[in-house]
Length: 203
Image (cartoon, rainbow, N blue to C red):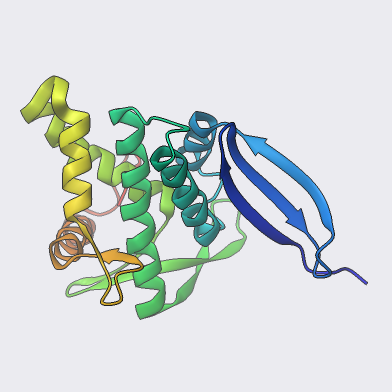
């Protein structure tokens, strides 16, 4: 009989230690991943099917930073905050609207999160959310602030979030939620008036 595997994620001086154990508390294996490598894995989509685990990883990255074991560059901080905003938006839409069955290019189907706005709906994915944020938020920051763009983008992303009433969990701020709605409504309006673009466009 297979037992459920439980993962414990912990910041250490040498990186993020991911320990897997069974329900009896017996450790099955450990994996130590450096902080910079872990940020690259988040950005490349390794945790897109396990967003809650990715958020736990991010919490430990910031714990390592607070302990002085790792010092993020401004670019790494921007990558992490982009991941956070995209994930908070996906999780919020999942809570509001659940999932829909979406047809994939290979003919199979998958369950995806969905955004529903005033003028329609659209399937949303973590990777395309991050792309849209990078294209819009970071693109504007680089255009306006040049060499200081990474730090300014972090400040924008942080302003798109807030802690909940208990002060323990992050959520989208009202401004962040409205900004994401404007971004997605604009894409839906473009689809309604012009149809699907010839080249891939993130939403």
